[in-house]
Image (cartoon, rainbow, N blue to C red; front, top):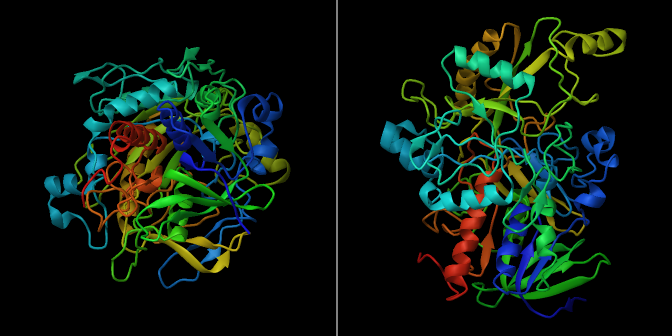
Length: 590
């Protein structure tokens, strides 16, 4: 039997980056905020305490900060006619859990979207013609422009202490920054991180081929910094423990390092952990949310009334909750009708390893989650796609995240994988093998989508989310082109180049890690027939429900998603504060 709690103004489901942003901004409006996080409490001083926080076996291998897949996971299949099976071991994606979510264990790479990224379909149709977009590709525009998001990208970078070098300030090109960057209103809050040795070698090789490398934007503070919420961050010490770890130096931005200390001081904010939300409750009309139902730490079912519900969970979880709650019409790949679950996408990543001459001392243990350099010549539509026949591109970069002994000890191809031979190969390669990666966009397709699994259920008896996804010819062609260019950079460095390229026709393999950059399923747009949320991330069907995160992306770009996720969240909450709270209702007329 359920228990009903007293109403609150806003209930936030999930407390990662978007949940923290929404909570802080709306708490500042004087609203009573309740954030529900299904995982445990995690904060920087206790979870990220040194030296416990740099246990590679506990965190990288056993996934201490990752979701328990025995309690809840998703299922995966390659085609509409295939049989889905559960994802039971962390491989392709590393799902976070607890306060901070994936924002606690991320690396800190923080990019803004490019102008064309936000109007994907209209841009390609205008430049190359409508026939250039293949049949079955369902890309679309976000419904919001870069110009509208620019102040909110700036706000995010100031909160997250992003270190970088501007390439374009108010239309004026800046030396040393990204030459393809859209206009920014100001410089980054902090200067870029210092180059590791590998980045220096990458820069020299890229410049010799006519490219203009730049330091990747890093939410790893390069200097002591106080953000707009009054929270202090310390300078990165290049310890090499970012992805999969809490930052004991208070240098890597995270919800609990950058926002929670200020938010906890506000009496109108409550964070409740171990609270698994089962559904969003609707009134008899189905057009208004009345709150949520969740299971607390004692197993008690709680009904939490609220005037507004904001879904701030991870992309996959947001979509599942919409489907479980009956908000929006589920997508049908056969008819092409419906919207919830539509346009799921991932990323296609490849790269090269450069085996540098003997005697090279890369000192790989000196690293940070976002320490490195990149080029943008083959990302987005920064190059002529006309003769190439594919859409999209990849961010190319060398990022030295560390040199940890278990997972970051590379060997040359063909080396023994065990015993004395393997040990000798590790000794030989540790100081002189460096990677150059290409993080590729993935377009959305009619046959790639999310739905509820008809067979498998979680520990609460609810259907798991089912992912239907596989690679397509467009992405294979894109990555083959980009890796050819990356190989040239590797050769210009003077070492032996080992190419790692996924071959055309191979299937998506969940065992190999790439990134946790999954997108779509609750996409934003200009039309309720083709999107789940409007340009303000407001549900078309239930006006007091907002859905944040990468679930709003209509397709996936070559950048890491967090910068765009945060920019969209600040854009959304700014309009909630200025419009919705004064006049609750649909902010865009269907």
